[in-house]
Image (cartoon, rainbow over all chains, first blue to last red; front, top):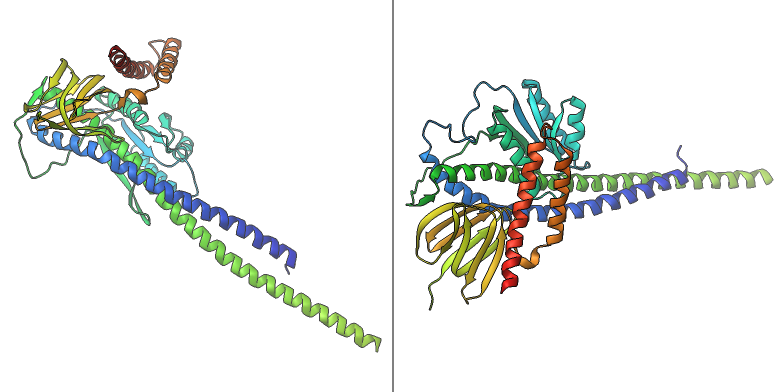
Length: 284
Length: 143
């Protein structure tokens, strides 16, 4: 039988935990808003690039040798995998889902180079024993410079013929209750063409090929950047929900413990009264 | 009333400028060029450098940009650049320090190292960024 004192202690610690989870939920909500803002800010740039590529992609014939970002690297087996996870835990199955998917990919083809964003991803991937090519922290300070660096590295290796394919794994934010783990091909660039075609009479300098190549590189980086922002938003969404749940669980626990505490107190009083009464009885 | 055109300067992080302007000069891959309203539709790749724009009221504004893409469509100019900074937003000392750091790292490595090219590319980028910023400084002090 738990003593009253230990039960009260447990109530107190449950309350403390509840306070922390409540605060964390609030922080996540604020961060979520910020992350969503960043996605919005990145959108015009991406949209414009897509628009122009859309226009120029038709000028690419079946011979893709002049476009290192579009051509397939024939005969190369090695692939690259970009795993985008979070830096921190306490966010439900967010990191686990990403890592699971990455493991599955690795099982299919073990000959992969890894690029990891997010500390939790790094920790998990280290256990697999594959050397990690490059790592970046996935916090709020990650900016275009980081992505640029990482992206340039990947693009250079790809156009140098090192990889046959570059895929990235990240979480997509759907709503704060729902996230989806997405596997997406980064290179060679797959471009979904708009059906509506409007050809503008533009002069491209120096050549269309040069402009398109420059844009494709930016496009790949934008994709990567978007994936990182998307994953950050998802992470905050998951954390918000799981902290909410933790807060509710703590409330339940506090209720149950309070009940237990009251019962214990009651029975203690009953025993005391019984003792007093029987003591008085004995004195008679 | 002088003729104006619309200009948007967009980076992956934000929209730096959006409004009407009278003229614009930008560092193209084949040299610097100027754009006035009703320019023929054209697009090109940009080098790191300084973009000068004259806004509706005739005020000049300078921005240091890293490489990107520009598109001119008679009435509308769109600049897609990786970074675009006004003079007062730039901390030249930090940039210099970063460049020096990268240089030091590069010196400690030999060409045989795996990441030599990578670091070199990084350094080149820092340097071009710095160059753009320095050009901007020079121009603003001249006036």
